[in-house]
Amino acid sequence: GAVVSQHPSRVICKSGTSVKIECRSLDFQATTMFWYRQFPKKSLMLMATSNEGSKATYEQGVEKDKFLINHASLTLSTLTVTSAHPEDSSFYICSARGASGRIDNEQFFGPGTRLTVL
Amino acid sequence: GQNIDQPTEMTATEGAIVQINCTYQTSGFNGLFWYQQHAGEAPTFLSYNVLDGLEEKGRFSSFLSRSKGYSYLLLKELQMKDSASYLCAVSGAGSYQLTFGKGTKLSVIP
Image (cartoon, rainbow over all chains, first blue to last red; front, side, top):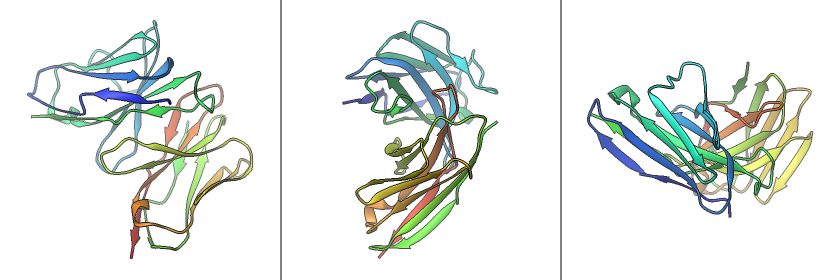
């Protein structure tokens, strides 16, 4: 149990286009979902926290108009990178927290999405 | 604020024991996680400590001292497949957010 999927796993796009990444909790309801970004050889940096049905809370320095997050249901959150630029190329990982966690604040991670902006 | 420190890289021999340390300074504390991450993949859960002491799970053990802001992950009987990055992450008080350290890249050599 507690499986989180992400789609797509890899995406290459042209500069200026928008890319949508989906994060789904497959066998549990995720009350909270988190979006992280990881640059090569760096650790995970939290971008935003989203609760179902409410606006996401963005970390300092993360542009909410550039990284649009929608958490419309208890099993789906989406991250849209708008007007992507080469510096947005990174590994984006989502995680989900739900009532089925063995530990109350445990997060279950998706497999990540590798975004390359040309 | 949150500050988490762990060594950048470590090398150990197959079959040996290795200890990866993590020190943290956080505003409040609600548990410490250790994750394993292979290159290009998502982190996978290894252990969780919220009380002082040692948690053992097979070849992996994790220790916590809240008064010292210190934890370690102990890996026994190292295998080549244990080569990965090991991330220390702390959950702050009243928060479900995790703050990650920069990770320790472990290389297991024959």
